[in-house]
Length: 517
Ligand code: NAD
Image (cartoon, rainbow, N blue to C red; front, side, top):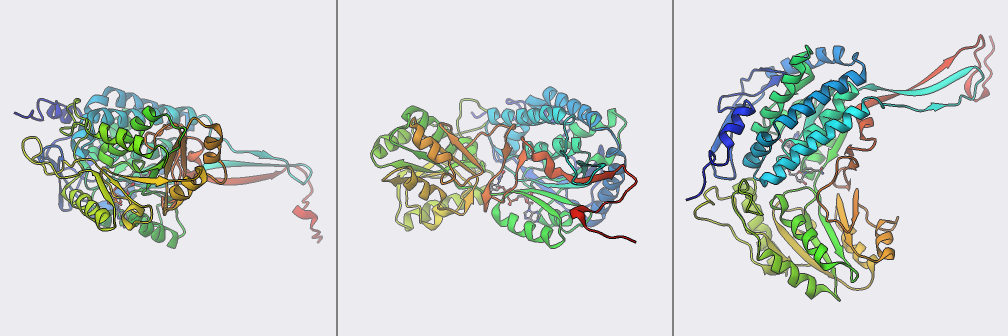
């Protein structure tokens, strides 16, 4: 008999996180209020109802905005290292609740428990990173062309930052944004995916507890819930200077237009169509692990999932056979059971898209080499478990040009050299993650050169998925061009001001312009 949620500790995890089946929704800090329609969250793991939240109405949103705007007045005046101290405490709380939150992520989204824990670890890591940054929000000092003048730049907080996130990273993406925004002195309003609202409630509870314990205003962390119409409340609102939106390219194009129309700033993290190039000098064992994890990890629902394997003709059959053999060993089932490699995809709509993509690749002339299919029977009652599939395809197929958010891997063959492989890799509209597997220095450097990968992430001898928080994360082209997380991504959450101070009794003009009265 298959195990129940109690066997996997879900009930106690929900209790630890203060998430219950009661109707919670909109929140400023620890104060929940909600009056909209109910959104039910069903687990893709077993199809059971986890809980319901109420969607944010226009009236709820008005309250949130008022509280957030007021909180910003106070929060921005706190010294940045003090804001860092609050983020440090938030990171500590996450450490305490790591197992519980990791379980909820796994249960509500469907990724493996290990990946759920990894997602919470990413939150902890970004908190640590933000704490250090809180003492380094530096600008440059420049030499003025005018005598007796000093010129420098400084960074001030932006105000209310709107965060819209996708279902596949239901907690980490919020933390990437919010930990940085908070140390920068911003306050945040978060609209999680309507497919993972319970993760939103859990994170809100953890953050609100920290702000309340420090006697800080409620409106520094805010949660709104609902579908795109609730997201639009923020994208249309001129009081939200920055919208950080993670999701599909389709969504990004709408949000970009809306926010640009009011001359706001947007940080867009959108779809990928990531490839690994496998050259004749690749280490085949490493290639297989990197490719299989990249293609089936999170059941192919990472923005950085490996969708295309571009293999040199001289080793094509060897790599294909090794990958096909590895797929034969995959165990598909409850992601909370650590014996399984692959869990469910998010819902039955996603299953339909998976099936349609497999039908399309065949229609376009592709050959299925690892058969897909929807699993049924004991343990698969949710209807969301699918078999990871592999198809031999052509880069020009319409379906290959698209991101299908499911475990489908396309094998593409190249002849010639690394530049021929790069033409295929770069020959898609998206530009998020890319990788080359090679022990040949010339190939590796060509891949990283100006004529190389056009993606925001380019890895050598690592797969396409699994970025660290220390680097700036994001992609080019239809992936949206945003950068968040590490490096100097914090600058997006602040406004830059150039200051020139004249400490003389003269008023010389720049460029030597004469203006005598
Ligand atoms: P989605 O685009 O359906 O939804 C994402 C979020 O946007 C949700 O919260 C949704 O309610 C909101 N939204 C949708 N339309 C909106 C609108 N017009 N205005 C305001 N908000 C709107 O995406 P999804 O299915 O949740 O996530 C999968 C997609 O996200 C994939 O394409 C994946 O590649 C992408 N993704 C990208 C990254 C990255 O960093 N590049 C990370 C994670 C996911």
